[in-house]
Image (cartoon, rainbow, N blue to C red; front, side, top):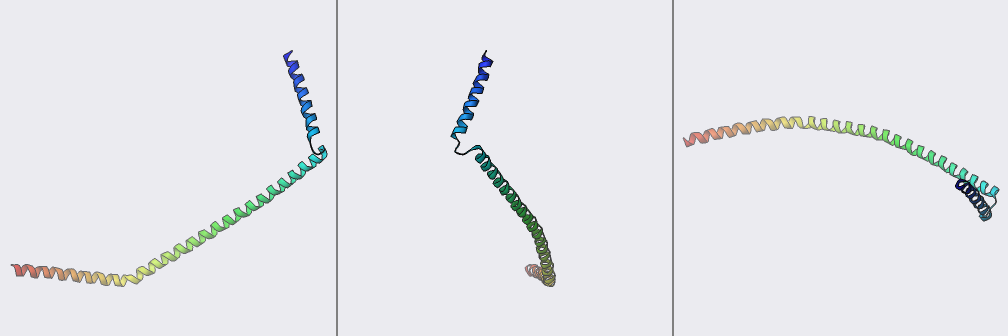
Length: 120
């Protein structure tokens, strides 16, 4: 008995909801379906356009990444070249400084010997 009354309640509730919906809509069903179709088409077009824009952004990002990689490689090559040139430029000065340091060390040792001789 309870199942029968439950089913009757569902049918009556559905009928009342349908009737109230039909009576409270500001436009006819045909107009409503047409508006829904237009909105759906508009949203689909927006999604397609958004997808195109995202693809362009993706392509631009890939291109920028590749160009950035090339620029970084070129920059690192330039830096290595500059460092090697700098090393070659300072090598003669470095060797001269080492000779002068050796001469200073020899002079210091001679002074120490002379000081030890004078103390003795």
